[in-house]
Image (cartoon, rainbow, N blue to C red; front, side, top):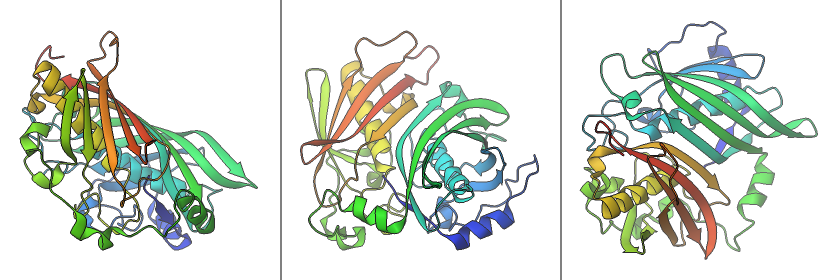
Length: 343
């Protein structure tokens, strides 16, 4: 889970900068405050247009030289599906800000999300293939005393004028006092901040090429063990990572778990089928997070294959995250080969 603060001041700014026109602008990014980012290089949303019927239209420009999202060995080059998921997250922060029943100063956090990409070719990079359109609509919402507490959105994705896929996301909102109570529910001490734990960060035991990566800092798994067609590993908390920890956190940012799940899946299909991570891509991921992931306690990762795989399912993998011996989050992945006819 990653929390985002929604202040009245930034909501007003958003209302002044959005329009109801059909055209989207990709010329410049929105204010980093609107999407809760510190670094300008972490802002991908370029436009947001709210509707009165719970729908929205947004634009994002996908990066070409990002140290995390473009650090892949994929050949041919492809957009990272997780930067698309991050672009959706940024659009949804804007959508919840302008919701008529959203509480002032609310903190928003993601309970679950599902990303589906049509095919590897839909992620192709190139001229005119970095402008992402996001067509969102509200599927369901919950309120308490006329104050929004939870909302589910579905976002249809268009890249370069072609259908790319979709994202469904479940977002909870809480006032600051209620959030603090929820945050401390499973703890007996105040959680430490990420900046207080930097000296505890350790490198991974894995070379990055095994995960289809070039940079060691983008590896978030360590100490993998294979047995009985499955994988067990330890999650490496990348406290100094410029994207995951773009700002101070007192819990593991939600974006780390999908990356860890993908890396677990790549290791598993490499071990079992000899698949190269440079020719394997993530086409689908469904994440369900049950509680906050603590920074000061070990997180274990277990991955296995879905049996039996369905027709056209590619390489389906399930991943389970545990902390304090309890299930923290679960993911279901769909991996596929990038070569013609690749599984």
